[in-house]
Amino acid sequence: MSKLTGLQTNFINDCLSGPLTAENTSMAKHIDTRSISANALMAIYQNSAIANITNSLQLSYPVVEKLVGKDFFEQVSREYIFNHWPTTANMDDYGEDFPHFLADVEQAKSLTYLKDVAQLEWRFHQSSLAKDSPGFDWTRLAKISPKETLKLHFLLAPTVAIIKSLWPIDEIWQMNQDNGHRDNIHQGNDHQSNDHQSNDHQDIELCLDRDKDTHIVLFRRGLKTEMMTITMSEFSLLQSLTQDQSFEQAINSAIALDTDISIDLWLAKYIELGVICGFSL
Image (cartoon, rainbow, N blue to C red; front, side):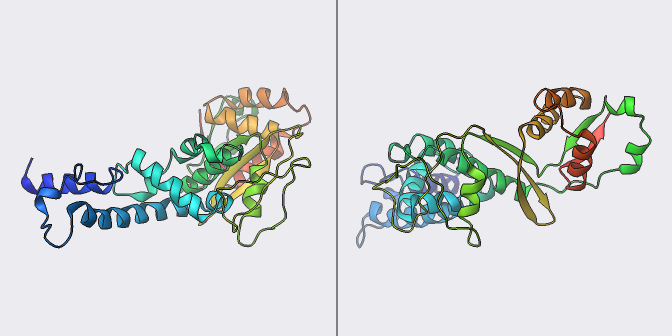
């Protein structure tokens, strides 16, 4: 290892190794400590690095930050960063495990929906960065017989994500948009209060007697990622396609849940929305 590479490695380790002390500061022997201690100087760089990485998490998880409050979000982000160092210089790739990390934070466990909201936000983030897909080839599809159509494997666009949750995360997400509603979702007659949350967070209370899950599809049209709440049978169809099942298999799964579903209308709608981008034989 060259001297420069060693210095760079020690610098990164100090920035992302947790609280600095005189004993664990790798750069100590390379720093003039006559006017400032090595760990105090490296702490300045460390705080700057953590602030930049935290900003990346804030951009990926703005609704989560609103739900828990800015101070708590920054505190949790700092803990997450120390336990999950960035592995690349591209911050667009950073933060995939954050929803799972949040689920294990003791002070946030009363917010049972938080992990699912975070996963929704990460899928939004991924969708916004995914590659565009070519337009659907209607002419090619028209040449295929109905019998052969059942054997097709329809392909979802790279920008598409499907999500299932026990909670109304679609409503929670909408409520916390700058142009969205500020009404609360109610959970019985109880109000959850969390001492760790700041006064600027959005209070959310959920209905525990919901008789159905929330099913969501995300897709991008142009530069905008859109969210659409869908039925269980529609979700089943899309899920079957993600598992590379034939169109016939996907139809059978959906009909088992809803015998009234119109497959022709469903297929046309999702092709026109750009959710389905192609097919293979």
